[in-house]
Every structure is written in structure tokens, then in C-alpha cells.
Length: 224
Image (cartoon, rainbow, N blue to C red):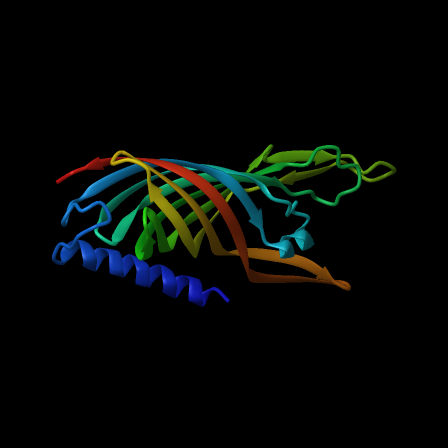
């Protein structure tokens, strides 16, 4: 299920690279072949795959925020972004009184192409690839099941995995220096998992998805 996300990411990134190396063309504001730098902040919501409920994750939507820097030229853009969100994951051990918070941090490169424009409203398609880091807070908990059982200590090691995805963005430039956008996207990542099936512990590597919706504001600088 992850192959379309990988393919779309590669195609958009390649398209953006070729466009920057090729001849100039007019853009929405009439700046022929101009390079522009956009520095933006965004905030919204993020939801992890419902399948993670099988591993005691809280899959309800959570807050999302981040920063993005892109270079634009004509119909193409490429850049990088850093984002963060969070959820929780319980252990299921009797006597659990505290649930660790899972902090999700993504570092991504991205490519975009403008596919449609009506007046000042632009529709962009995007692809991205990067690393997703999962960190636990606290990263060590001790549970007292009660009875004759000894206390149990669980260590939550951090996890870093590759992730790939795609999305769509509606964008508008209010002035030559200011742009607003709303974007929806999907990401895919793999995790090593373990679960019980009868008396057997099954270990496997599974692919999961995450969905995001965010609003952004960007400051634009024309580079020449």
C-alpha cells in the first residue's frame, strides 16, 4: 500500500528539480522566471492509522504545527519542513497509572507543482519523503500489578523510520509578500510490531498511515 506514496514523492521531487534547471516561464504574479523564497508557519490536525489501536495507541485527532521553507519558480516549488504532533500509547499492564506520551517529529523534503489556477487561488499537488521520529515521555515506567507479582519496568526506546506521502494544497497570494494556504496530506511509515495470537507472539513489520490537514501563512522574498 505504500508504493503509490513512494512513487508520487519521487515524481514530484524530480519534476521540481528539472523545472529549476530548465528555462524560465511566467508565474502567477507576472514575474518571468523569478526565484522566490517562502518561509511559512503552519498548524492543524494530525490523525494516525486506526490500526494502531491494536497496539494501544490513542488514534483520535491531535494538534499539528511546524515550519516550512520552499523555493518557488514558475509552476514548481521544492523545499523542506519540520513538523510535530503527539499522541499516547498505553501498555495494558495491570496497575498502569501513567500513560506515556508519544511525540511525533517529522523532517521532510518536498516538491510541489501547480496544476490549476483560478484568479488568485492556486491548486498544487505535492509529494514528500523524510524521517519520522517517535519519542516517549517518560521513556521508562514501573508498574505494580499488585498481588504476589513483582513490579514491572517498561523501557520505551525511541524509534526513527522513513516516511513517504503526498497531498494537495489550495494557495493564494494576498500580496507580493504574503500567502495563505490550506493543505491535506497522507503519509506512510513502517513499524516493527509484536502481538499475541493465542499462545504465540507474532512479530512482523507493518505499514501504517497518517493524515493531516493544516493552515499555513508564508512570507515571500523575491530572489531575482
